[in-house]
Length: 276
Image: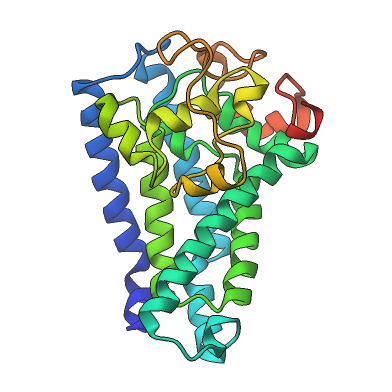
């Protein structure tokens, strides 16, 4: 099965990406949560352009990506789970949950370390919050994240299936919880006990530092609650809160070339967590 997963990993991930993206985009049109500051023609080419650029570069540098790392680890029986005599299903679930915790902790670190924040702030410069924001990450951040995941997969001995499930969930979850969609209040209140909802994660994209440095989770919401980084709502309310960072307010000036060079030539605003 591992060879089949490795051979079809790209198509599986692409299929889920397109399916979730279209579903969220349609939902945003039918039931938007907020009125956008800029139209899609201004922002979407940049956000989707950086997705294509990052994907092509990552595939060139890491042809088999995280699943390929898991396949190598499994062949050599490296890591924790390959040395535990427990059912395969438990290994898959355990590794998936552990990787989700890793991404939460990585997210906190990217807010806490100034040099990493300069990469991550590209994600926060989006002045609106929609499905494309979930894939707006600087190329260097994607590469650093890939190296961190590779190390974690090796240490955990994460099965290929767990890594593929995690990668699909991470991307689908990011598009869902960044989507400009309106959930019924009761549904949101129930769902956010288990997963990160759009209203929960939108707080993280506030221009207020106390709100920017909260709600770090991407899939499971439990980590924010346990580690006390959870904030229920923005102070100004979801309709009136300001999305993004103070120094970058014009999406027309935030095109792809500027986003790529931003961490290296521009300081802007948005203090890392350690300076809050």
